[in-house]
Length: 84
Image (cartoon, rainbow, N blue to C red; front, side):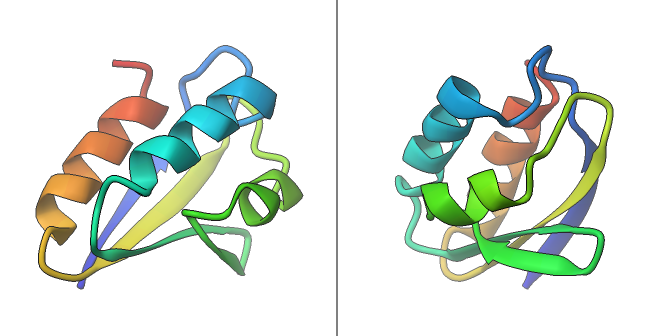
């Protein structure tokens, strides 16, 4: 299991289109992926779960990956939320 805390640098946070793109990217990986904000943990492959967190730019979130490609998934998704 790999965990990374990251600051969301996307201009609009993870709202609407960026959230949909994030979920699409997360679904490319076999690992179980979760996103945590303020003690709420949701499946990072679920658009409804992600939207329920209402993540705005500048907030800190935790990404959690567990599975065969967890390192690759974490690296890619951290880069995504940092706006790289």
